[in-house]
Image (tube, rainbow, N blue to C red):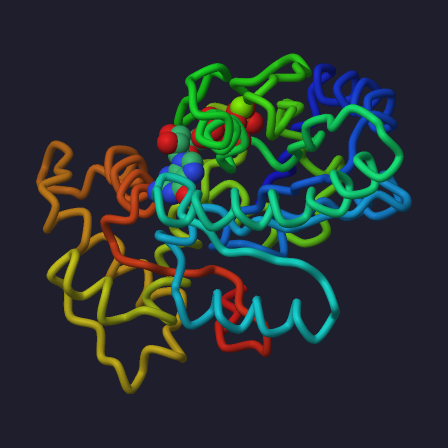
Amino acid sequence: MKEINWFPGHMAKSRRELLSNLTRAELILEVCDARVPNSSRHPDLDKMFKRKPVWTILGKADLADPFCTERWLEQAVADNAIWLALNILSDDDLLELRQKLLDYNQQYISIARRKGKIVSPLRIVIVGIPNSGKSTLINRLIGRKSARTSNKPGVTRNLTWIRGGTDFEVLDTPGILPPRFDTIEMKRNLAAVGAIPDEILPIEEVSFALFRQLAVNYPDLIKARFGINIRIENACSLCEINAWELFQQAALKRNCLASGGEPDLPRFNNLFLQEFRSGKIGRVSLECPQAEIKKVL
Ligand SMILES: Nc1nc2c(ncn2[C@@H]2O[C@H](COP(=O)(O)OP(=O)(O)OP(=O)(O)O)[C@@H](O)[C@H]2O)c(=O)[nH]1
Ligand SMILES: [Mg+2]
């Protein structure tokens, strides 16, 4: 795969601004994507945030494989880390998070009251990769549409503190991607979930790699969605040629036709990625602890 080098100037600037805002913060929420918890966590957040408490939010949990999400949460408990899986669009999930935050703030409120100080709202910094749901989470936490949201990465450009009644004050930040990607898989996974703008991707590589991975790990979902026949007993050992044939068949089944009856792959690449991102293929995770997900290189 070609190099994806996407660390635009605004991200480096945001990182600097973020650091200067940290002293005001009492809690950091890192919004990751539940389908790719490994790739979507920032590699040096702990160093960046020093002793500030960090909670990891696995957003878009409604799109992820619940079995894998459970494994991630178990691993977090074992590591003594606070991880929460959320469908940020769900009222129930938001209510639960809100309550956890209020409970957490109770300690500060008690201390302030004891010292006769004014009780201030809990100051939360929201960080995470682009398009993970940070601004949506903020709007829902504070109960009004204050931060701009979109299903494209790179929408929030400035750091803004937003006051949410007497309970919270929240800092919205632009998506900050790791300045380096450790492995080719991580790049592909971030690209697949839409954390990198499609215009700068080798979209055909991302889409085919994703198709192969899903055909191996979720053959029933691919069969059902695209009406193609994958022999499950051989699915784990899908070879490159086989996967390529299946990919072309899937394009044809979806009426992505070029002249001469050939599959129109550029069209299918877009369609396939959109269907994956919106959850139409089903609930899938591209990363799972304990290697439940077979790696397809
Ligand atoms: N299905 C699902 N969609 C979500 C969830 N959270 C956010 N979204 C959608 O994800 C898209 C991105 O949301 P934003 O809040 O703009 O993401 P962001 O992290 O602020 O993005 P940048 O500002 O570009 O870094 C929007 O279309 C949201 O509706 C979730 O838990 N589940
Ligand atoms: Mg945003």
